[in-house]
Amino acid sequence: MRGRDLIGAGALWSASQSSHPQPARKIYRIGILTVAPTAAAAGPRPKSRSIGACLRGMRDLGYVYGEHFVTEARGADDEPERFPALAAELIHFDLDVIVGAGPSLRALQRATATTPIVMASSGDPVGEGLVRSLAHPGGNFTGMSAQTVETVGKRLEFLKEFLPDAAPVAVLWHHDYVRTWQAAQAAARVRGWKLVSIEIRDADEIDASFKAATAARASALLVHAPAVLQSHRQRVAKLAIRHRLPTMFHHRTYVDAGGLMAHGADSVEIWHRAAAFVSKILNGAKPADLPVEQPTKFELVINLKTAKALGITIPPLLLLRGNEVIQ
Image (tube, rainbow, N blue to C red; front, side, top):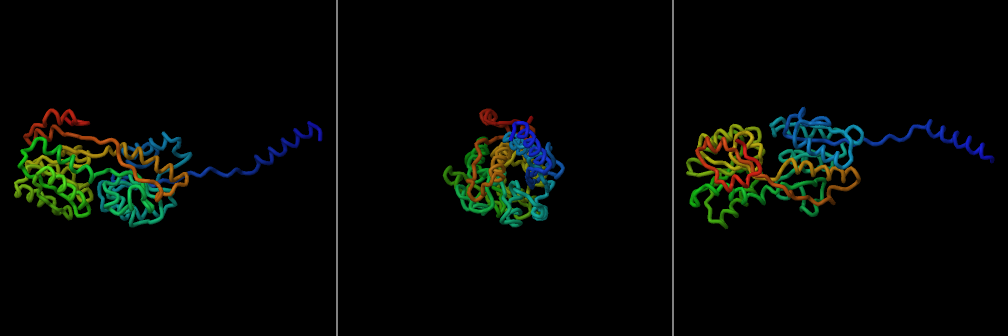
């Protein structure tokens, strides 16, 4: 065959190839279940700092919203009791992976045993039965641990820095997080501190819990009951001031709502890191084979306005250790 004929044949082959539709690139669908309002979590530029951090993590890994993936978000709007219905709703979509955190994870666990779930984050993934172990999750969950249980002792230390050694600290906890209370007991036992246990079952017991702490002559309060108190943060902060109880929380949202102090893993950083787990799953990895990671960045947030309302002075060294001080 002559060269001219070869060129003509090549052109015909190229034309025939272009006339056939090429397989479309798969656009991954990522579910998001969050305590924030749906409107704050939806779309390529969500208003939620946490969800935004996750999507920024996807961009950092080379994913383009709308070209490589889209999100299907559902938000509880600060009402954790809505999580079961929202989780069930998400499962009906053909999703490649779902990202959730905190109390939403239990709802997702009940809703599906097959859809991959990325935790961003879980306070105690092993204790809550979400994974078999950090190294070998063994199911459809993986992601980030917030080490909430492991850092209980550190929160107590910060709280005790401006309290008399003999003063008892009340611990407000929910039975779903019994390991938090146990960790507080262990930390106090080593340091010789006295604790008062106040178990709360539902939001109807919030007022009574503070009265119990006052009746026990507690000098301060350590709080960990996210499923119950999430939508009552401002109420809890006001009660702490009314009862003159310096209060330590596990998450900065309580301080933003008027609480005194919070110490815990940086949630924005954790959500950003969660994107790496999403990417691995989209590329074929099984959640059961992806070890759960622990946070590397923690934050101490202090509300000086609340300290003034309580009539207490935050020690200068503690202020220097604070990652953020709200005036």
